[in-house]
Amino acid sequence: MEERERYSNGLEVRRAVLGDAHVDRALTRGNAFNQEFQDLITRYAWGEIWTRPGLPRHTRSLITVAMMVALNRPDEFRLHVRAAFNNGVTRDQIKEVLLQTAIYCGVPAANSAFHLAEEVFAQLDKPAP
Image (cartoon, rainbow, N blue to C red; front, side, top):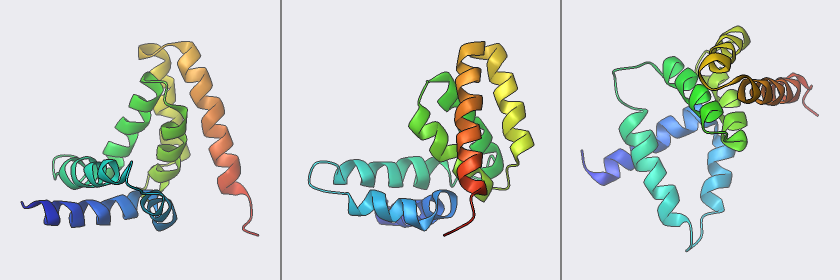
C-alpha cells in the first residue's frame, strides 16, 4: 500500500474512532513542529494497525484502554475510553477491562483508571448545551 493510501485509510479510521472534532483539533494544531508526528500516527497507528482485519475495532479499543492503564497515560486513557463507545464498547466491558488491569497492572493503576473512567462517563452523560 502506498503512503497516501495508508494516510487516507488511517484518517478515515481515526475519524470513525476518535470523532471528527478530536481529529480536526489535532490536525489544525499541526504546525511545523508536530505536523510530521500527526502524519506518522495517522499512517501507522491508524492506517497500518487499526485497519488490519485480524481484530475488530471493538477489541482494539479494549486492548488500547488496558494498555493506557498499564502505561499510566491518563490523557490517552480518557481519549480511548470516549472513543471505545464509537466502537460499540459498553461501560460494563470497560469495567471488566479495568478489573483485569487490577490484577495485571496493579490495584493503584486500576483505581486511578476507575476514577478517570467515571469522569469520562459523567462528561458523556451531561446533556448537550
